[in-house]
Image 1 (cartoon, rainbow, N blue to C red):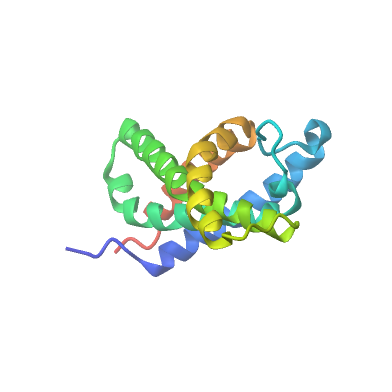
Image 2 (cartoon, helix red, strand yellow; image 1 turned 30 degrees about the vertical axis):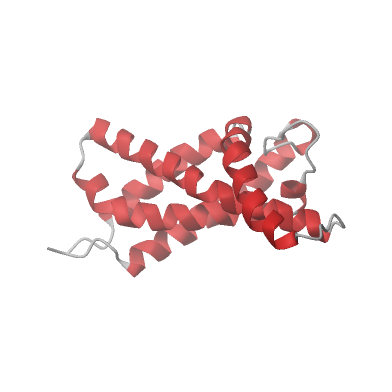
Length: 166
């Protein structure tokens, strides 16, 4: 049985997802009212607007890993199966990315001057919990960016599942 993890496919997923997500962000930034591409929570500091590439890189990184592992199953699936696999990849990517996004948000909060005495606990524990609590909500509020991301991830996963077939 062939190993489903292919480094070339992983690089394809990483480069394409990040290479499309960042220009799409800046395009939507110019189009959206007040440049609000990402969702925001009430009274939340908007560090993801100051550093959008960092917050985009996190889900692209995990998407690449998950899509690489799922590519062979995606390739063999029917039309509806591919929709299922796309949904699985998206949900799992958000679930895994959210804690890291929360930690990055807390790191940016500390860099802005809100530096607690127990910074490591805040960064690791509170950041993880905050990311799990609000990450999915921020993604849901990031319409149309998230919707475009779902469509593009389906197309990239389809391309990547067909690429490098032996």
